[in-house]
Length: 252
Image (tube, rainbow, N blue to C red; front, side):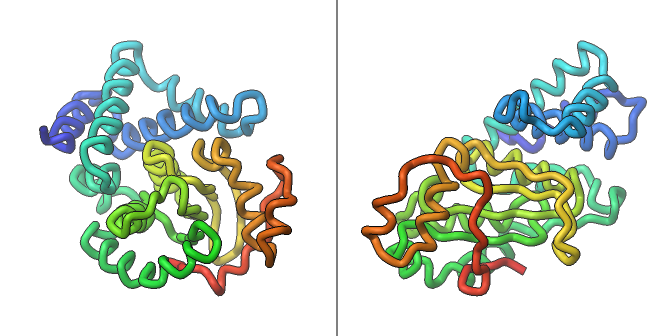
């Protein structure tokens, strides 16, 4: 089944009185923040709660049902094939030219970059059990997804042996990344903010991060000896330890 074609056909039928870029923005906002709100509950950011309600309020009940059907297609597409589905449909809808002049990296380029960047992953994973990645301009997450695929090809489990810090200034792009990281169960955090200015407007952990006790794993990774690591109790910490990214793989 061509999931991109199915998604596009349904998407074009939703709220024809709105610009396609607005509908896509709302869809990504609704789907991404539904994951976030369920995960964070009462501790969710009030600004993001309001953003969700505003997006939902643009649509009739029938249109909301179609947005749910779009969500199902995204899930089915990623179950069928692990790739940057949302980035592909975004470009296929020609929103890259019309919406903030964004152009997402093609998968074949991301595959090559993942292969080069992660060439020493065996050494890193053998040393501490997992690898940490930083993507300072994550877009829809294509680099992260191809890193995920590369580790699988190398017989690793990226759902347990890869942690990612992803950041993008654009809300929609960052939420696309958050959605796909969540559906692929990739541990990590998505930061919405300016990398160059080190600004953080919003900060979201993925389900895999919270359920996998990654606060503790990251803290343990910076200890020098195994006995010290074993003494750490499995309790969440309030803040993540400072990471020395100079020694970690990074996409640019």
